[in-house]
Length: 329
Length: 286
Image (cartoon, rainbow over all chains, first blue to last red):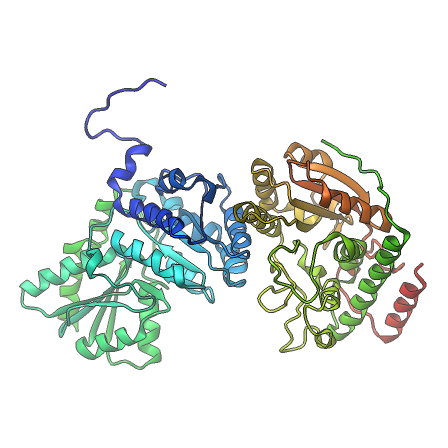
């Protein structure tokens, strides 16, 4: 193979990881856990460069299983591996994991209660111009309706590493929803304490509380800051665990604000907004709810940043939506 | 490659045990289905000799220790034959045999399809066809990672082979050299809607598996001596580098004359008088 000196800015799959600190953290955390004696096994379905797990393979080739382009086989096999005490972490695009493999996840992982970690990467709109087959705007809704399955959407690379570690001590199956691994940093490792099912509250909002998950936490914090500078009191709740949902955090937010705005990189139906709506109704909370996300439609092709702007899912867009909500509330 | 296994020296006692336990499987199946008032008689009868051989001689198990880490595993793709396995698990002391008496009744963990979470001795839950070979592959891969020496047996229905995931697993297992994985196809020639060959043909069966890199063996699935010795040979073959597939040619409904190869008996119920006749036929061993 001839080697060509590439100009700055050129890239290929093997250099992609340099741009994706989240993916690097995931691979290194899992490899470190093996070093520390954890029974971690990693599986991929022909996407080890896209999800960066080749970095894990380099460190622990005997703990890495390549399944090829057979996602359903990978999920059922992970269940089989887990029955012997191993902790398989299997990864593929969120669209394939949650939709193509939905039944394997339900029947072989959740029903059997095997502590498999399902890592759905490139969730939401992050594969912008690859088209609808590669978008995952339904995964939270689907995974949330499967009994005994946790659903976790870490906000940034720090939280992704922390969540993987925290779940090392949990015996339940879990779906991790992550982006491209390029999410801006929200948390410093020394200041983050990740607890399953315990939301992280950023400031108190008398006017509005934004409840965000995963990739939307960072732009939600930007939006809150923008509004604070305009004299509004806006809090942000990082609802990293969509299931089990931190209902107490929602109750507190409702008591403080009276107006709640959920923000998710997902169809507004059935995901975080749906979960919060259920909590408000069931607990008869005195709060208005506005759901922000992808409307109930298929997403057009476009670069992710353009799509975020299109759907007002970037900082300024969320701030604009929040102003409307405050005006309506 | 196609392998012809020759019958090794097995004792008359081994064969007698398989015959008796296969009859036990069929009788218990009839008894349990009479409690549920609906069940898969015929699908279970076709694998009675296979169950009997696996649980009484072939598989390495420990009485009363369903979670023994080094045990051989058994997974049923065709989970609807679980009614024939529950009595064997109780016989191994994995759970109280009295549980069988309320099979499928509310609060009892024994359902038409097996649930590993609630039934000791069930190595994997099933019911949705096509998953079990993948799950068995996972157990096989795990044995290598963890340095354990057990075998993984996976029973597949012949209709089940129409599921795409089976072939994903088949490709993957041979690629990974999962030589402790032994799949058994219960080739009873029928699925729910009729003859498998009329619905979607799975032939040429041996050649297909062979071309996927599996060592293929064929056996008369109702010949107790042949089933026993073939499974023993497959279990103990340490030189094999590929996964093994055993095609067990069977008869759906085997043992009950009016059920044999009759489409309707995929699912059914025998009222009292018919049940008595069936039990009589099974006891006479015709």
